[in-house]
Amino acid sequence: MSAMPKNRVQGIVFGVLMSVTMAYGMEVFNVAWKMGFPTMPSGFSNMTNGVFLAALVEASYMWIVVFIFSNLWGNRLGAKLAAGLVDPSRDNAFLCTLVRSGCTVLVMCPTMSLVASVLFNVVLAGASPLQLPAIWVGTVLKNFPMALLWNLFAAGPLSRLLFARYFSHLGE
Image (cartoon, rainbow, N blue to C red; front, side):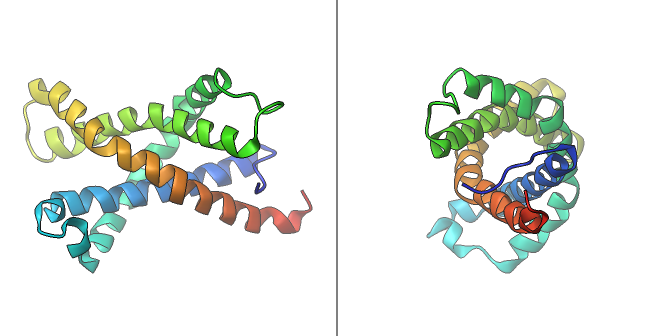
């Protein structure tokens, strides 16, 4: 298992890494969705490089929102939920990491889906605020599977790898 944050500065660095990788991956998914790739024959396999640039633009500010909300309640609630399911002193470290990641997504996906629904649908696209509950539920249903898989198999492992590489020279 790779190194994990041991102090506040390391926690901030790890939080930034996770926020950036999660925001970018989810923006790639959502930009491709907005461009209609899932409805085309062969679906996401038709994506173009333009998706990655457009996602980079949106992720350039969305990661900050992810970072703020994960620090306000996402990480804490995720940890509390995970603590009721696994115990690091007796359970496998890999299982504990998976459960903690899944529980954090359980909190953060609805949170970020609400932010995205308000920003992209109501503010920028002019949808009626009265439709916000339905838009939010639809956004959660669309984003949750991707957020969970992206966190478990891409953003989490990549962030832990980068963090471990960066802090390995400090003799933790």
